[in-house]
Each structure stands twice: as structure tokens, then as C-alpha cells.
Length: 466
Ligand code: ARG
Image 1 (tube, rainbow, N blue to C red):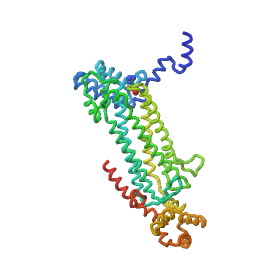
Image 2 (tube, rainbow, N blue to C red):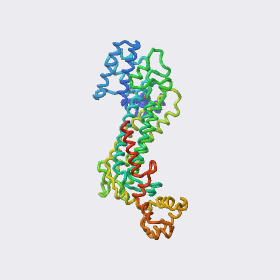
Image 3 (cartoon, rainbow, N blue to C red):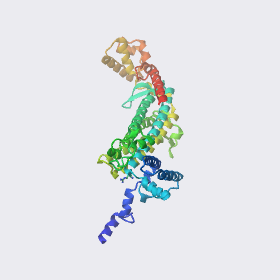
Image 4 (cartoon, helix red, strand yellow):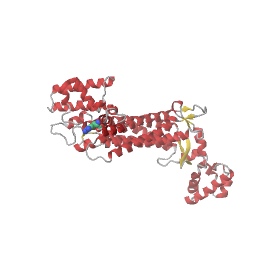
């Protein structure tokens, strides 16, 4: 007896009433699953209508149930609903209040249903809605990028590999690379919606029910394409949440890469872009500084979103069929990832639209580092018929000579170039200018402004249809 008391004092410290309080604290999900109130009520109304239509409950009871649920919806939205941890989760909080409001008829709502299919349908509805929100936000970001791309289809900047200036490209082309990436994210959202568009409601606890329910009716009423085909799968599946987190993590990764580039571009050393005051802050001690905080936070928050994906994958990997309380851990990951991604998309769209592009700084950087060396080699192949390997070698010697003379490749004299290969003519200077280098890359998907504009037109058309 006294032993028990001591051990309880050791592990029950902050839980005044011992094991019962600890159980309540670990078991309750109302602090976060209250977010599902609208979906829960919508699901319950659809379920009650089906129960009445199949004759499982009376029309009079159904009316009372629907009326009570609508009252609860108003109470929650007005902030007057009292959530109770003792009632564990959103489902029981609503059902208990329904009993207060309409009496015994409330007890009929849970016929042919379990919290297992109830929570599965609630969360699916929520994630599906969120997917539509993400799709809209992605379209906004893509549009912002398309506008910048159009404006800068011919603005030359250095293209990098290994973070070393490699060949000149255009800023418009660079923006369009992100249009491709975010469009893939958009198509992933649409694929995910397509797969999650099935209703688990009516699977009951796990095995289906002996009541003559109509799962097609509830599926349709809730906006799902069809009911899920296997009751065990219906209550144990969280793929829709995992897919959402996966697409969110990939999208966040894209956002983070762009954020990283914006951070680099906005350093005084690069000076390619200047962020608007709304998306940067000053330093409290160093007056000259303008910090790209929003971009840094987009980059930083990516860790959180990816963490949520790994978290839920880890929860699910050990789950035998069907439902286990572990799965209650799905919600906080999904909610936080959603909120974070929405914010990241909004911040990035704002930054892309508002930033000032310094075309002169980009052009200057594009011309440094002998960026048109490949153009020189290509000219030797095209005009003198040299094998590319030999042209590469000749170009290497020209670069070495330019380094020697401390000038850019395009500043070498014709005599200098002819000392390396006597076949070289003045025509070579036409390809050594960055603008011409860029203009010449007309291969499909290349950086020539004409090609970039083609892609912009195509994406605008596709987006218009979406
Ligand atoms: N709060 C629970 C969850 O989020 C609802 C389902 C509870 N089901 C059960 N059989 N205990 O997963």
C-alpha cells in the first residue's frame, strides 16, 4: 500500500490524481482534433440521412439529429462550445453535446458506425480540402514565376553547376525551371486527390455491419467518388495522409532550393536581386544589413515538413491491421505540415512577385569567368570542322592565354586567337558575347529567349485550362 503511494509520487508528479489523470492526458486528442469539427458534423449528418433513408432510424430522429448537429456547428463557430478533455476527442465531444441538446435520439446516430471509420472519413475530408488549397496556392506561385520569366526572358545571368559559373543562361529560363518543378508538385496534388477520393464511412469498427446501410449514398453525399472496397483497409489506411505529407515535403524541398538561391542572389557579393522590405528585416546592430528572413524561414521550415513525413511513416510502419490508437498521432503531423506549407507558399509567392531584379549585375557576372568557352569550342567544331575533343583542347589554351593576359575570353585579340589556331576568323567574336551565346541555344528546352518564350506561352495555356 505505502509502496504504491511512493512509486506513484515518483512517476505521477504533475498528475494530481495518479494513473487516471495520466491516462486522460495521453489518451485525449481534443486539443488538436477539434480542427476536424466541420468534417465530423458533415459526416454525421450524411450518415444520419442514410440511416433514415434505409429505415434504420426514423425520419423524426434524423431531423432532431441534424438540427442538433447544426446547432453544435454554430456553437463551435461562435466560440461558445465547451471542449472537454474528459470526453477525449472531437467525436465524443460532439456526441455528448448532441445528447444534451436532443436527448435519447442522439444515441441512434452511432448505429452502424464506429469512431474508427468516423475519424478516417473526417481526416480524409480535411486532407482533401487542404489538397485543393495547396493546388490553388501552387497555381498562384506558378503564375508569379511566369510573370517574372516573361519580364526577364532575355535577361542574361550566369548558369551554375557545382555553384561555379558554367554557361550563360537567362533569368527567365531559370524561373521556368521552377515553374516545371512546382507544376510537378501540382500534378502530385491532383494524383493524390484522385486516390484519396474514396469514402471509408460504413466500414464500422473494421468488419462492416449487419445493418442494411448504403455506403454509396454516404460516399456521394460527402463528395467522394465511391466507397472504399475493403472494410479492414478503410479503417487502417493512412496512405492519403502519407501522400499528402510526401507531396508537401517534395514541394517544401523545391521551395527551399529557391529560397536558398534567393538568399545567395541577395547577398551584396552577388547583388542579383533585392528583396522588398516586406520580406526582409534590418539588423538591430548593423545598419547596412538587410536580411532575407522570409527566405531563410522557408528554407528552415522545410525541415519540419520533412520531419512530419518521416514521423508518420515511422508510426505506420509497425501497424498491424486494422486500427490502433497509434494512428491518432497522424493528425498533428498533417495539420502542422499543412499550416507550414500554406505559409511557405504564400511567402514565396510574395517574394517572387516583389523582388527587384538587377539585370546589370546578372549580365556582368554572366560575362565573367570565361563563361562562353563552350561557345568557342562549338564554333571551332561548326566552322572549322574540328572534333569536339580537339576543340575543347584549343579552347583550354585560349582560356589559359586570357588568364595570362588577365582579360575575359572575348577580349583576346584575333592575333592571339590565331596563334592558337590559325583557322580562327573574326566571326568567332559573335559567339563570345554572352547575349549571342544565350540566343544560340535554341534546342528544345534550351535557354534561348525564343525557346523560353515558347515555354511560357505553353504553360500559360495549360494553366488557364487547369
Ligand atoms: N481519437 C481517435 C483517433 O484520432 C478516434 C478513433 C478512436 N477509436 C478507437 N477505437 N478508440 O484516432
